Image (cartoon, rainbow over all chains, first blue to last red):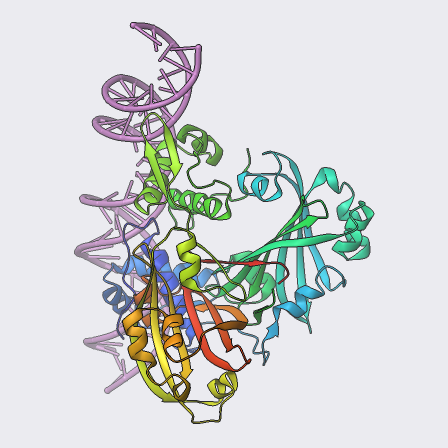
Length: 246
Length: 246
DNA sequence: ATGATTTGTCTATTTGTCTATACAAATAAT
DNA sequence: ATTATTTGTATAGACAAATAGACAAATCAT
């Protein structure tokens, strides 16, 4: 097996982690099937041009994630190559988002109070340190988790928001309770990242998989930002469609 | 001052790199505008709960990427915010990039003739087996590879396309040569994948990193599809901005 | 049973990262 | 001019990461 992945020793990323991620990507991509044996540590060490102990650390990390299992004398095996929901034709992002703020299809999985850092303060156009409400929601379609959303609101403008949202299950409804009758989307910024551990668990996707990240800002009728949302969706389940007449 | 991004000291990722990525994300998001001054190193050090030297290393990395510029005695400034790529019905890469004071350049890295398979035939609304021109282009901004695009055209409608494109470096120009004066975007479908080996090399990113994938169809004035494009961009370099509703 | 292979453990050494402190050099404000 | 602020440079120590070598323990092939 050849080694296209070269290690970067000055990138601020530990070598064992680079090896870990390379192996993980290969397992995910199907280069090693579930139950199959990995090359022995010594072989991997030569392949990556690295000491055996460094490979061992990478393997240890993957073992603690449940991806590998090492048996003394036998070898190291792929324990669980999780897992993709092959849900046929891709769900359209717009279908979910169009119903997003109105139908109670979102599950509240957490909320918190926190102070605005530089990024949030800028997005919501408030001073640093302003108290914000953070809302974590999970969108599910046909029993399959689709999207995790984190929304921030300025606490002062929507004081009783969490309770209202919990009751109605609708952001629109909860905003109405706070006297905000209408709002519109300012813009959405779309990018993509590797999934974080917590999101991976919630979405039921493997670490090392990409997620689509959509950051959006909603404005009230006067143009003041009232909501900043960062949604993460499993990239292999969701496709975002932008029409020409936007 | 709080920071939502907490530092992980046992993840195999150097603290300076985590700080670097946090700052970069904040610059991209617009928390610091181009030309504006960053908080002094000592302030950032307190904010991240870290020694000043660690912040300095993060800043050094961003400086060598051309994102920051540090002046002794004055402060550290945002030199050039990473690129945003707003898409819409009439957006063309070169227009956007030139609008942001970056010099556009599309490099032809390959072309071929091939028959339409089921997917392409459907997208371009032609019979199976129709001869298509496939074009591989690499977009570069300020010397940094931004995006790889694969475009398919129906050969019969643009017979001399490859030569025309090679000469002008512009798809719009090459289409004009074929008598197509104007076109508009029908829709764009956005998703994300793990980068493929060839793309990784062209874009200069590591395997296992995510890419944004934008599939789009351009129509001529009569509504006939003339171009189907599948573009891949390094997710940490390009951000899609969509105005209005997604 | 024997030997080869493979993972597990241990110690030692070198290199990289982060902290701590101090001071120099350039700039800005007064 | 003087002072305060801010970036640049230097040194030293604590700790993590990576290398190196050696050996034990389990498994497999013969």
